[in-house]
Length: 102
Length: 267
Ligand SMILES: Nc1ncnc2c1ncn2[C@@H]1O[C@H](COP(=O)(O)OP(=O)(O)O)[C@@H](O)[C@H]1O
Ligand SMILES: [Mg+2]
Image (cartoon, rainbow over all chains, first blue to last red; front, side):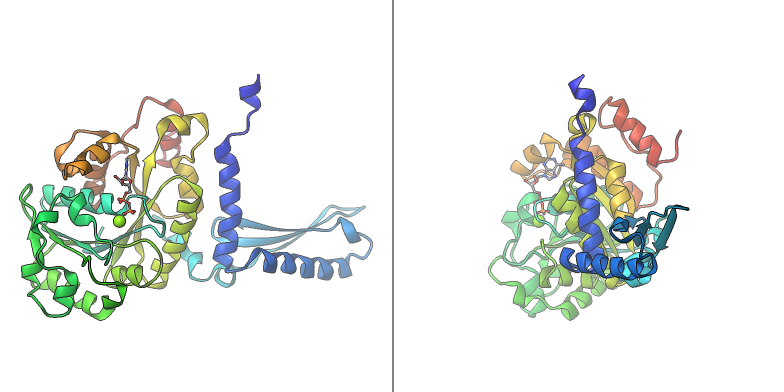
């Protein structure tokens, strides 16, 4: 039935908000963020020359920190190189917010 | 909340800061505290009209700043409830008349010399001088947010600015929730907002015509009506005073209730 397949508009909103707030907290423009992803992509690709275009760098907001995740598909093993930036450096004073929550 | 001086803020305009200041301030007084509400929206004052006290403003906060009257002369006593006072903003001056040092002195004197239990400071929209002056003397904050994109984003920014000012006792009020829309999945629900903002909740206020009707005639809903919003504002006051008040159901919506139960540790 159509209404079962309809994506809740609030879920769309929630995802958009998460992205926007990730940029806000990192005090980075989306342009800077794209540049960071491109640079990281280059570095990771240097260590995995065979995977080249298949490497995928993503920015995620998780609770109190921002995560920069590079996914490297590998023919033998599936490797996952996670650069979990400490919240202190990525989101400044905001980092401790979660821990302050009672 | 331990904080005696509490700033009401949001970043975005029109989300309900002034409404919250009037209703929570009045409810705190109703529940026994000596309360002063301060309007810092210089040039766009409206706490006086929201409270129905516009006819009684003689001196305002800038008069106090500039020594044209005594602090006590500028305090307007509300006659509907004991121990509720208003310190109005100036309508004719601009934000350049605001002064953080003087604001801090006034708030300190209200607490230490005039014996106020609570100083509730209504901040203007934005993150500039007006907000900074409103926040400078605060020990705690209530961030008002509507469940929509611009408001949540601005609230996140404001929470960061409060932290930068080392104001850590900060609580969230989600205002203008519409249960029917939440049920349909067309409005963020309480736990969505909490997940994104990551601060502690102190109140959920539904969209309620009683707010408009009360404001129209200069009544304060938390004193005069039995509406859902009035109940919500009274509950916020009690939670500020340290009582544990369960969250009211906004309607019989089980999805919404289930959401609330998820947040507050039920099954
Ligand atoms: N819970 C509510 N239900 C219905 N109307 C509301 C509610 N909260 C605020 N309003 C209305 O929204 C408008 C803006 O509120 P206001 O308190 O002046 O916002 P702010 O001070 O943040 O600019 C006012 O007309 C007010 O009556
Ligand atoms: Mg206002």
